[in-house]
Amino acid sequence: MFLSFADVVRFDFSTAHFMVDTRHAYGEARHVAVGYLNLRLHVLCFVETMNGIRVISFRRANSREAKRHGKPQTIDG
Image 1 (cartoon, rainbow, N blue to C red):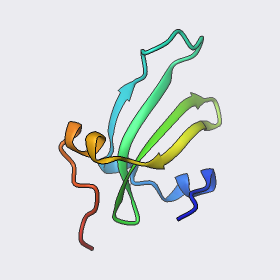
Image 2 (cartoon, one colour):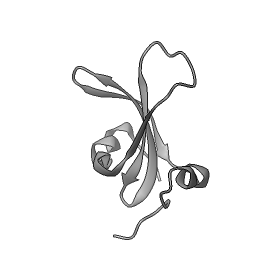
Image 3 (cartoon, rainbow, N blue to C red):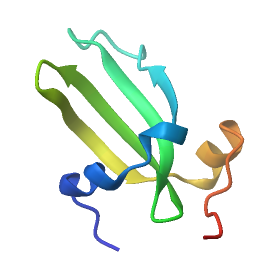
């Protein structure tokens, strides 16, 4: 399945788990959200801007990430 940054508008921010990405000195506060899109767990990396967010990466979560955040990779509708 192809995933576009435009799909972020359907990402479920209300149930996502958020953290700040401190792995590197990016020069800006990068955030990581782990949450669902179309019943499938995804990882979103973004920067907050005055107009909303700027997406850095958006992809399906792998099984290791799902386990780390205590979320199933897929949920039943």
